[in-house]
Length: 358
Image (cartoon, rainbow, N blue to C red; front, top):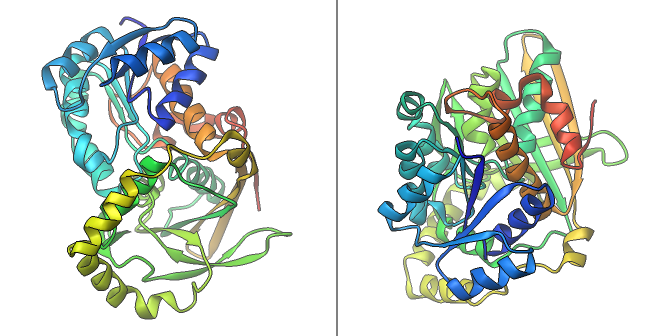
């Protein structure tokens, strides 16, 4: 393989951070995107990496990039609208694939390409960003501590002073009114967002925090990672205790709004949002992620703390790319736990996470 990392969407908010991290690590990186002027400016800023002008809808151009790459990393969302051609190009071109999607339906679709990826000898890593990646690794670590079959796996995300990029907000808008998801009986099922509440038992000084179920990427990976019969992801949020009572009607109302002219106005507002939070704002963000697994009468928990979630996403994605290039890696669609196994704790430390069992 070439040892080349190609970053699709390199001039976007998360793409730029990935490009900066890749350049700092001394990787052979190609910056890819639609706008040649923006690509040229970013390349000059980073000291001259190569560029490639490509649209994510151009399958032939994506295939050519994949042919020349060892890893194809795409930050172009919403992935449900723009993501599939890059996956097909990676498989057909023999390149490992990474995305930072937070969209459960898209992640589930990528996982359905497992057989094709195995036949091509490539690894597919969907949902390898902040929202989803640490929770899955923590759950895998907790399952190892449990030492017994896992019946139920849960992860909770607590975010303080968090601000989202324009791209993240556009993805949230594209999913507004859509059903949530849970892992039940070995498969994904639709479930209204907020249909389940959990008093997430964080260690002190955080303590118990009310949380509501949410369609985080972990929902699509916790089952395969831990063998759990049931798995859900949660967000710590005010009003968590009452959300299960209003989840279904609220989902119906949101769906109706997004299908109305008001939904068009929301989408226009999203298109005009600033690119993303300033570095100082990102640095003030704090998060705590908790994973709990249960089996029989036993329970195991592991948690971690992180800051600057967008930079953490860049370190996750580029760190995974580096691991794939260093090899060997399993072929097919993998979860974070399946990729890292016993090295999960070490990688969490490498991305700046402070973790412990609790």
